[in-house]
Length: 354
Image (tube, rainbow, N blue to C red):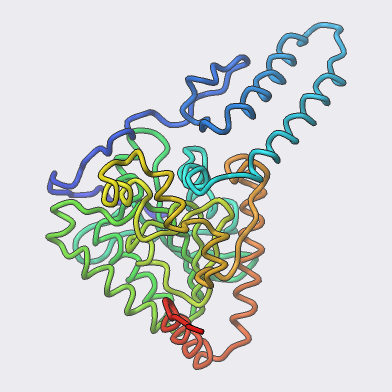
């Protein structure tokens, strides 16, 4: 993998968002303190408690002659039923929390599981490399592709280095460089979207954040190669859309896509972030709602409990869907793909009154 270059920021861009200082995934232990684990969401508490009981039971019986398999089987059945019950009734706000889950697979996690080979390409050839966006040449089942996606960090150090998945303009210009390279060599483009939004720091604005996003939108609309975009976590506003214009848009079941975060919307409409639950409901951020509106072409089912419960299974589902979409797009000529993409973009927001 290509070496990532250090970011030469001017100092004005490095801001630690509130509530993001916690270290990444805590090591598991036989009898975890569920209430202190930052990786367990509020509505996941009943699930985590049952898992802790199973782990505690196995720990207690370790090295003894006790036969606990029947009891474990009962607890596992109860665990499955409880998980199904909880996840069958998720609110939009709970889906938003799942989309941000600290254990959720990120772009590099999927690349590692999906690509047979991957060579990362760094830098925008104008200013710097931005680790908040990763991209490079990959091979999936023998097929060469260009993969580009947002990347978040797992621990405090990597979160700061990746800027919490919020790209600066050089990140979008890097993505643009890779997309234009793919277009020249006839390589299909796969983008993986997972960002709270483009970084709004002073330095980023001075270097042309809005121009970089706008140029990506323009160029992606005109690319001749197949482009498949997948929202794997958060799809935050223009920061997501800057690598989200393509022939097909996919969403993982518990991902979100919106013009603004629920907290941001609540702060504007109700002057308090405490109304985030109401905002999430009103915004229609879930994959199901966006599919109903025709803004998303396909929803990829996640493992029971979310992608973080079984990253390998989720990666295989994603891989199969991407290859299927590329196979369908290959049947179209360049002109047909261009016409369909144009009609698709022009159709967004169209009102058909009765």
